[in-house]
Amino acid sequence: MLFPVIRSTIVSLLLAAAPPVAAETREAPPLLDTIALWLTANFDLPAPAEAPALFTVTDSALVAMRYGPNASVPPGVVVAVYDYGDRTIYLSDGWTGRSPAELSVLVHEMAHHLQSVAEMRFACPAEREKTAYRAQDAWLALFGESLESAFGIDAATLLVGTTCAY
Image (cartoon, rainbow, N blue to C red; front, side, top):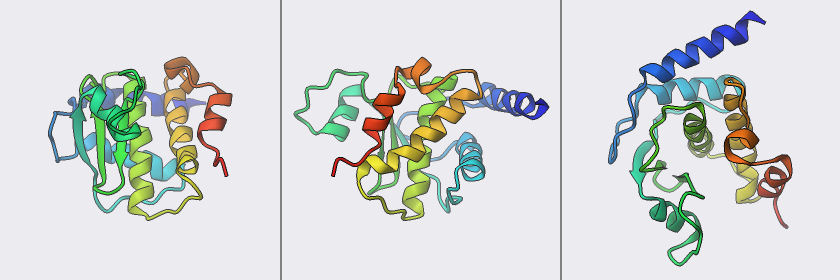
């Protein structure tokens, strides 16, 4: 029972000390190393040989990356994108990393980075989301939150979003 309290305290200290991610940066902050270590210890993901690049972009750019340039998705629906081709995490330019929910977005995208570096294969793109969402939910649980409380993602939505349609 004491271990979760200690773990939560350590994570809180890391959050407080972590500088915000600067726009247009290719240097990974030390927090990424901590998140990668946590992911490898808890989700059977391999340690990365390299950190991803990090960039902040507008919400409309995130929508275009995720759904295409002509998508009619409202801004704010897409909060981050991982580009498997260039191993880059794109975060919303409003992202600060100063809350457990915002950091959980980085945890989610780091899970994708670890999958990419390990060249993991999936039956469909939705299948790769299972581990990323599990990790994000577990991170949020460290702070008494969940995907549903932080982002409105309930179990049914999660099941549909992580299941191959064919």
